[in-house]
Image 1: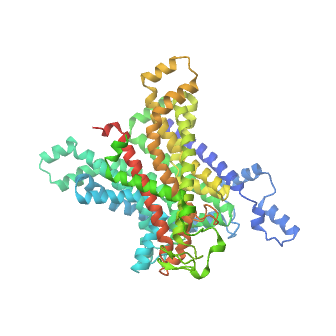
Image 2: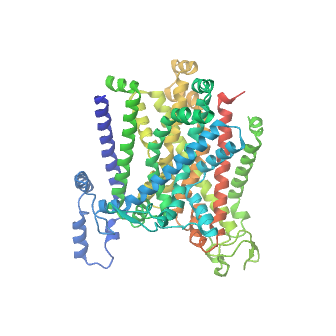
Image 3: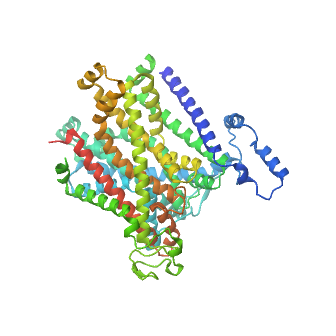
Length: 325
Length: 283
């Protein structure tokens, strides 16, 4: 087991190193940062001083090595546009994205799983067909389009919910949160729903397929023979049996929520990480781009590692293979 | 095979819609009442007019006009043309590269298999949209750059599908026999292995063209797609977004409806093809 863990940790570290190099080289190959940083009327002296201050006169590999060294110390550089450390900027934007992602994951779970179980329990009913049609739409409609429709319906036509920004926030532990005020919750409703749509569709599909399979199993036959009510069977047996794959997919989905947040946050002007990366791409703020991408890569590698390790804990066959290798 | 496809009325309708949209997109320069790229023909007096408005051109704008006074129907036809072109180009290049990678990995085995499939798995765990976003940001705007970004975001799906199909074929006797003959390896791959891997690849290809179109629309909506001189559907939607709040919803809604009809229709065709190619569902 320990050998397997060490092997996977080394792999993860290697992937991180490769990703950081790719991201750095890729991002630093865009255009000429000097043109972005220095106004065209600046004197030659100011130009030279700025270039030296940012280390842009060094060869690319020297810039990368110093970048890597700073990265290991948690120093992601300074934003060209905001003039504050990237880590500070990212950390300031992170809570907004985090609470949005969490809300959408919760919506996906607490609405998607019951709907999916119902659709799997009565697969031929009219309601089940409606649920499945919803999930097909959720898969094929682009996120940005659903966001627009939500704004059009709930903000423009009905006027029930605000169409953008975070609303009132409350400071807890030195961080601003929207979900603690009623106004903030109202602002969060539409973006969270928008972001959850894909997860909702996926949860419906997975739990429907799982329920259909489990309903035919001996477990359910025996439970029925024992005189348990259908409700008890669904809650105590079916839900438990389909939970394991759901939890796995959920962990992996949390990572991709970060990616989809880019679209949702742009539409709803939600001041999170996704909006930050779009802003930094359009203003060529490269330290922020690099910092964001390295952070996302880190989150992904960590999630994959945790999923692999939890498989090893749950499935003894994997452990043995790890030892043999 | 066509007869079997035609048995499903809904799928047949979806196919008809796809054919109709493709035809309209190809014929756009001839059937559109206005050339939306010819700035000289645009009248600012016609801007942001609701559907049905008869403009200075003397004909009715059935879907209204946008902020520059463009006839939306014409803009949508031309936008469909660009969206379809990007989707098909990206889908076919990604299919070629991905299929070759997957089949070679299965055929050659050994370290080639390990390296290719490791790379594919790593990429599949990373969201396609983020990858495309980064690539577009790195490469800059333009059709070629956009296709490269879409291909890079999508080839892995084809590689995984081709690898799965080719691994299954590899076990079969006919391939064993083909390998035993002194035919060159490339011939065995192209003439024997590839044709038998095609059905699942075609299904994935159909769905991925729809995904490429959606991805391109998303990138254009975020302002990272094609340059503004040739608006695709995504950019038309983005252009109308600021006017949505003031009730001029048609500027965004009609291009969006066109996009959704296209994507859903392609997906339905793909679903039917998957059911048809799936031997387990055959009676």
